[in-house]
Image (tube, rainbow, N blue to C red; front, top):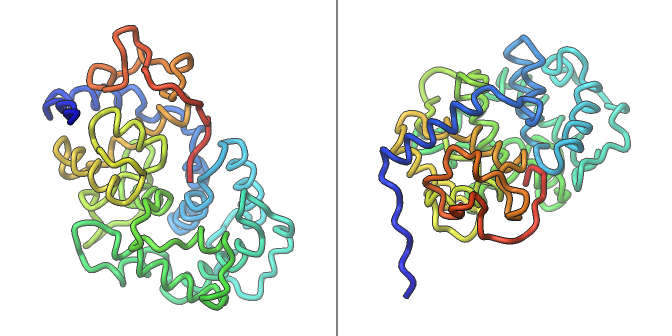
Length: 305
């Protein structure tokens, strides 16, 4: 039986993660959909923009940006006001397509957000109403998306693929990366994150690492998870290790870890990675003494779903 490689001790891991965090702190906002909510000044607009931007945060960066530019152009300078209004037909979004999310999925999604703004006043209020105060936010997310699915106006058995993708079911065990990304943006405050959601129940200690294929691969390289797939269990496992470094804010390292994958600093192709420049190379299982990782495959250069 092959022995599992020994993990670095927590102080060593913490030291190198801190160095990585410092290297990427506040850097390359242009590489992330978080750029879009930062354009707005009012908290209610930032909240809506964060939910929309995180929901479409999959695919190539250029494609994501193009889709979000079109969406926010249609919503105008005050997206919360635009969505709160009734009777809007959104003809500006006719023909909208982002990967498998088309206008037939996007418009009911916008309708559900609008009804929530009219009923609860904010997405935060709806989310908080379904939060049981558990160890993480997965049950609250499940209730949040369940209500939004009901508010789309589409029968449960007739939800198109794109709408099911925008409104996932976190309790089913998937990573739901985009949902946890939204929570990181809204609950965390500092660096690039918005910190919009405050008050009882909103705690960075309850956040989970948004787990996509980039972050999953890098988490495996660092020994944060042994899970073979990027699922909820992998996210909880990796977050548990990061909590040993910072129990109050374990996902503070997500920005720097995800930059490694999104910006192709760390890819599967040994000819394209930049191991020699990486702050976590000393604790990375994949980095070789030459500064090249031994794993061979192709790089995507995209943000996974």
